[in-house]
Length: 145
Image (cartoon, rainbow, N blue to C red; front, top):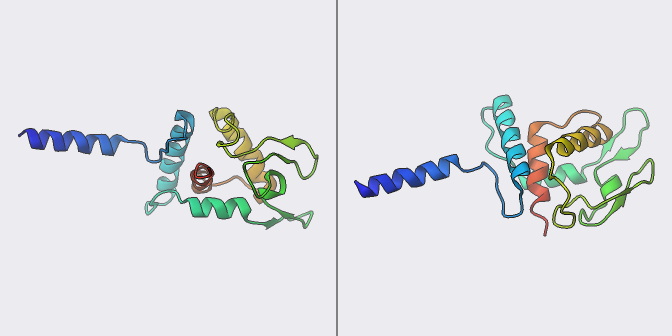
């Protein structure tokens, strides 16, 4: 009976654990990623989790702006090394490193996370990022050391 109880307790712990959690992720990011996972699963019942590889492709992927016919990517402002400061491609304004390993202020407030995904996705992709894209990106950015 004790073995069954221990098994059930362990099962409960694993089932109730966050969908994505790494040692560097703060609770705000974990909650945001879990919310994106729920939205991704609602959009696609076959959703099997976020993927750092897709997140990296999103970061480096170039998209041609429909009106200006210029190539844009996250790298346009944040640089190939996400651990260094960049500058906005249009304004030249300095941008602190986007990688949380280099900038402890990144991804600490949900309002800021939503704000910057909104602005940056519209600037690069000319649309909102999907929950899958947001989760993939955050999963990737937290792999950087």
